[in-house]
Length: 584
Image (cartoon, rainbow, N blue to C red):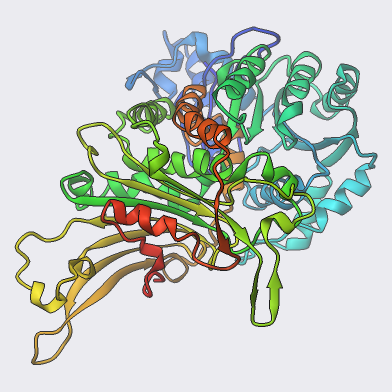
């Protein structure tokens, strides 16, 4: 058993590391309070075990340590597991080293290093930790620290001196230059890591902030030359996870030559969004919602993603994938699976991911008739000319890559049979945001239908979960306007996060990095989830590319292609984000 205290600064335990094809052990579901409070609890447990042993208790671990959970049932930590308490009982004699591979790239500078600092600022990182940047660029430790320092910010609620915390954090940051396919360079990295780890149990996390074509080179070199010998080794892999079923399967096979599934953390940062993580809380902890969460009461579900900017000179990368691969196949489909899944038997990672896979495998194959694609074109507004997609110098002039897509998906199970799940994602649209819209059915025999006229859609209840920006959850209801007459109004019961909570919402990368350090896999994508997602979209993508279907053009800054409205109308649906009242 790898003793893993969830949500705090004690680290994630000492699970066995895999070298080559050796197996790794999954962490037990033993948890304490997150960030700063877990270490005392873990130390107390270990101290209690030692005292019981000194007193001659027959099973000291049973008397002193908390129970663990296996297969949903509590069981006792046995004496065989006691070795995993040692690092915690010996003054936290373990360390975590986080190596950001591709440290000179934009993702590392803008997201990963700031997220690590935020965790440090909140006392969520282990007592002993080191951060290494690894890339081909020649750079000194001082140059890395200077680069990182320009992107660091503190929380609005400053509990400690910000500059002092930054200085302390930067002292823990180091750099090593090397080739991504060089085992020798990774051996040199390993020597540096050992110098900082000393005699402590060494746990190592590699974050692959690099193009997918060099994933396997890095994983091979890190596994062979820079794995931990006495702790755990984990690897975070950024999307895209392939371009279709075949390339995704090949990538998974390649990773599993050097790692086991429990060492691979496929990150989709949308799963770390506060409102996405709140989905299961909203549904499963509120009696008012769960009975309504089915085809009996829900008319349609809309998953909407929009950006108000184009590729901005980065079209070369985007053109290889397009909006369907970039947004729909991962971000929106993952949200759909979380939204539609059955109640898991527990909050354990595997139980939740099992239910998500069931949803994905129950989905009806996507038909070309249920998909609309578009591409933004140049548009002049207010004297300013905005370039079209193919005006980007990095994009081929004859490109048919969609920058917009809308699709109608269906789940063939008893709960959701016949309910359209409408997805829409696009660039260069009129607004920026991401939201989930749940439109409920009309009230049968509505006594007040005269007040709404012939358009009963204006009387439909709608639950909106605004993921970003300006996070909120609101429910549209019908209400009588005060006065002597009978006039009805559509009002909102609004949970606006900024107004309700004073604490700043953590960035998604903060949550996911902390989960990876602690071995919590609930918000990461399992290989069979990935397979099921690609099985749904690969046939559609191949058909679009083989038939060279031209996308419908739409002006930069518009509401998207007209075809998206026809698609929604086909299922008697109106896009909720296009009404005049779509903002809370």
